[in-house]
Length: 195
Ligand code: GDP
Image (cartoon, rainbow, N blue to C red; front, side, top):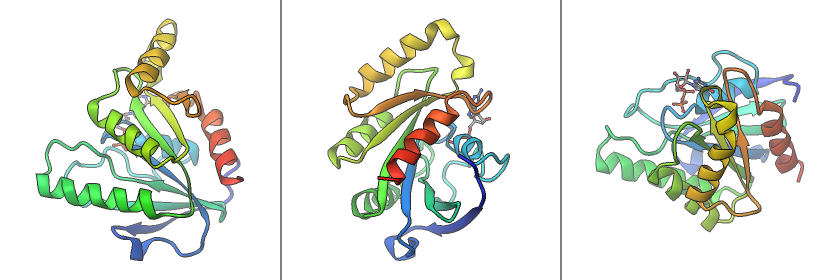
């Protein structure tokens, strides 16, 4: 996709702060450090648009990045922090849940998993949640530059089996380092927002 226009539009912690312009939205979800900011930066072809390596525990917001005045990529803060309190975790869960369950312009969800390892219990819960609410999902297994090509089929099998992927959900192998999978992710986003 050609990026003609990009703006960091809104940081929100609750529904009153979401954008009101009715543009389509695609949410990105994943554990902290999985490579979500790197995926966003790769997609929008900028080095430091979305901040990378966010510190676990600091104020977390939903970030709405407006692309080509046509849609938003919504950066949902990483789940599964070890260092935040139970209370913070609950509040944070509520913020994500409120967004995912009430947002009518949300057209699909990208869930990132680390392609080097088996998806974690947090990844499985997040996928089940997204399935339960019947949100169209693309699973992106990232950091694939760290996985030998002859192991890629194994990654596909492991992610598919551990998440128990539904046949309608797609899995894409990706690397922010060499940009493999970038056009496939854009293709999926385009299909969703032009629905
Ligand atoms: P976030 O917390 O999910 O936003 O994760 P970041 O995008 O900040 O990435 C966390 C760390 O993983 C950083 O050190 C990145 O450089 C690294 N990283 C992210 N994507 C990739 C990738 O595709 N390949 C490799 N080798 N490293 C990556």
